[in-house]
Length: 390
Image (cartoon, rainbow, N blue to C red; front, side, top):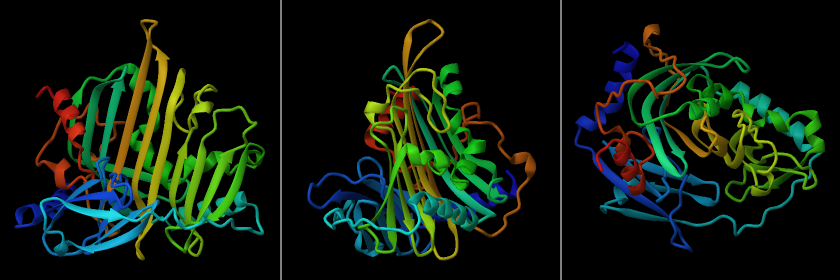
């Protein structure tokens, strides 16, 4: 184990050795009582990052009491003291911010020009070099059946300048279950570990809507953002009469700091019939799902990626001339970060495109409390089945 991996493993596993308090929280909508997924959670005393799963659940282990911040695009921000979370399962209700009316912002410059400046400034402001401790996982489906799963705790040492961002990857722990085929390898090159961080840090997913010709294809609108008075929301939608495979976008940004906070894009169902080309995944068949989300945070010191989610679903004709439905879900969660330099050995840098071919290395049950993204009960059953334990 390199000095870099030893440092991170010792530093982030100290809490496991201590008599920590394990906390389980379920986030629910105040009015509907339904679970709230994809909320961004931060332990303010340590900077630990987490995300609520599809059941609204997140789990954490704390050595000392701390305030916990909960943020979601559709809800009002909540801050709670961990000392108040004393039950075996603690429920926190979130109040929707959609009750507040949005106001359209009239700007002197075209919103696309504002977007360009946002991307330029955000690219410059993203902290580099920086070490991001990231939990990564991917689920694969073939013909509506889960065929493989992989996840791991990875350390990304991000360096370089805007336009030439690089990431050295060191794998701390990982596991892979199931089978993978050539179709998935060829069709999910957008999830190449060696490229994915540069895609996020150079905001390449927004390339399509900052080009001059995009004004002829997209409508741009800026509104107030109900969740934060310092934020604006930029909606970028394809013009209805344009018959192309074009995603809808919304970009949340801090208009005072001129920083991008969140990017979402998805393709409406009626546009799936057009050519199947997403931003980074070229698909020869028919697309039936395409979604992307990336969230960034400025904590007053560092500005960095906190989480991302990508989904792609498409139908192809395989080598046996039969139609095959392929679905891929990819998640990244930054659980800790540090801008302090940490030495590591270059020979330990992981250079493969994915974790498919890496031998399993499981030192702890990292997916429960260290991943920042607790698996749902359904996901646990899927993983157990792929591992051959069900």
